[in-house]
Amino acid sequence: MANDLLRLPDKRHREGKLAKTILYSLNPRDNDMIAAMLGNFQESPVVGKIQFGSGWWFLDRKYGMRRR
Image 1 (tube, rainbow, N blue to C red):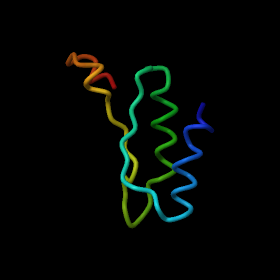
Image 2 (cartoon, rainbow, N blue to C red):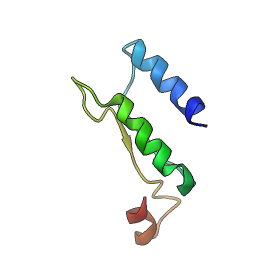
Image 3 (cartoon, rainbow, N blue to C red):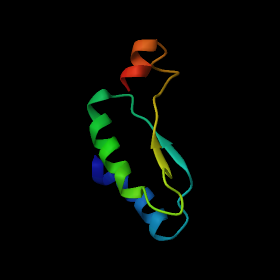
């Protein structure tokens, strides 16, 4: 799954066309993989170009949002 998820942002990054993006997962088992993957896109001039967020409309309890 990591390779599939990384393919599109990596291609756009190489082309210089990667937009600011927030990724989230509805499956907690993928959180560590997504968080680690985001480290590939933390460079100048736009630090935090891709960020990790919570699917708050799905995890609408305070506990669920904080845990993500």
